[in-house]
Length: 209
Ligand SMILES: C[S@@+](CC[C@H](N)C(=O)[O-])C[C@H]1O[C@@H](n2cnc3c(N)ncnc32)[C@H](O)[C@@H]1O
Image (cartoon, rainbow, N blue to C red; front, side):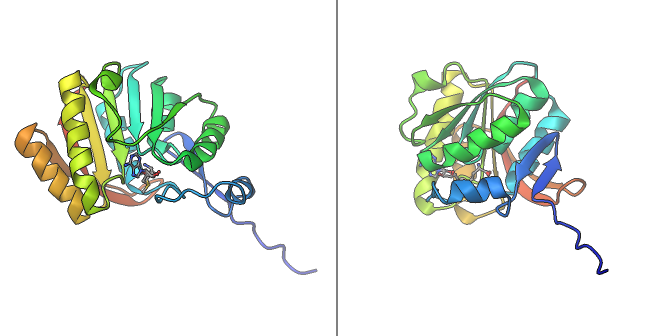
């Protein structure tokens, strides 16, 4: 009798959450119905660095988090699951929300969602937010200004901390330089290599604790 081939897992478990790979049957089913078209088609790696940063820093229970350009919602789900955060996932592309809902369900958390662009978020929409997160959201030149303005608006609305992660694309650095110059903050190099391997630059503005 031949050896049974070991099935490769289609789930990834790290930082207390489960994320699904593209090969997972539940993801494949959604892919036949919903097609994200601004790169919200997987969990992007720099989100692991945000999780690691938050794990090191700590997060008060029940913190109100806005995940901008949430895609499948990895960092928001991490905050909700591990710290009881109240999370709103915002994305311009409604096709990402069924993937976010699936991930919220398999992780046993509830995440609110809103379809809107970074530009559409007004200062009054940010008043309730304490922590604004964004992983891999500044990848085109035309994103520099809207994200710079979003960070500026957030801090002036009273958001305590903003963390934006990126593997290091030029638009991210341009945006980060502008933010640091006008609002403050710093860029930290971050890498993780235990449960998952990832590295990113983190723009951190303000402080939560
Ligand atoms: C590269 S994906 C990153 C998704 C998620 N943050 C992650 O790390 O897995 C970028 C996300 O930003 C969203 N996005 C792109 N431009 C946007 C805009 N102007 N306003 C809001 N969301 C936007 C896309 O739809 C997509 O879900």
